[in-house]
Length: 394
Image 1 (cartoon, rainbow, N blue to C red):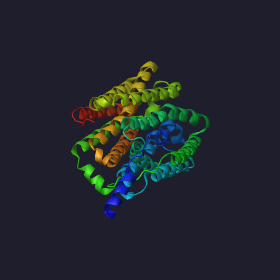
Image 2: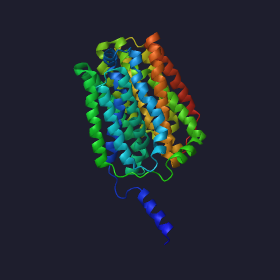
Image 3: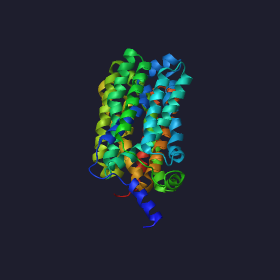
Image 4: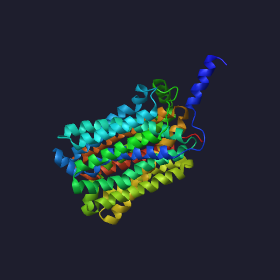
């Protein structure tokens, strides 16, 4: 056997999935990491009134704490694999969780809104990079179970919304929003330790980097789907940073329970999206339309029962989206899944930036109802777009 053949064989062996029965521990650790970065990203929505008052900003301006994270994420997602083409993905994922913990500490200690925004920018880098690499690391740990890995990661998001965000609201009211951010920092650091101990080495794809990204960008169907991702994420995040304000407009005493209902709906949506993944195209079209209905109901709700139905439907529908979009982009671009995922993350972050910024302007100028209706219109557009896009069969 020649030297070149030996080298190729060794490289292929190193890149091959591990043999034997897969262990789900790394996927659970990855899901916990997702829960921590998602909880960190949307934590300002749980404590927005107190945070805004403490740093001397309006509630609409304070909503930019979410937008700042998204701005950093939009730049990070497509560039991190280009900057680190040969880095072991386990090392990168652990480092990103450590960065997320540091960002939460910075926010907890921030003496001003400007310092708080800097901490949130660091979180954006951590979050976008983690989302870009987590799916690939999970599918390497349990090869052939893409839909299960996608559902597990989305379940981490649901845990953050079902347990984390309502609990953060309670903790924030009881002991202060700064203590809440500090507690999440500790949990995120713990997640970094667990991930480092449980996740095996994850070598990068041989073509990872700028070449892979350029080839993914040439895929017209992928980019059309990414456009739909922007629309549905914009629909949600025009409204979501201000969900507590929408709830308090109807009944301030129901805030914690309504956030919990939103998260319970999200958990059901996540599980159902994994179960129905074989019908990806109709699912991708239906979820945004259901989101639009939830947003319209929230906009016009005048009683707690109607609001409860609205927020459950809202949480149910938007929580299907991460599962759907991860599967959609990797099915359309299976050979360059890492770049496809980074583009999906970029789409989310761009939409979060635009949506939360516009939502803040609408909230300060016109109240909460118009931002819900703008979000609903964007969601319908996303559903129509996916209805007309074909997706390859597996």
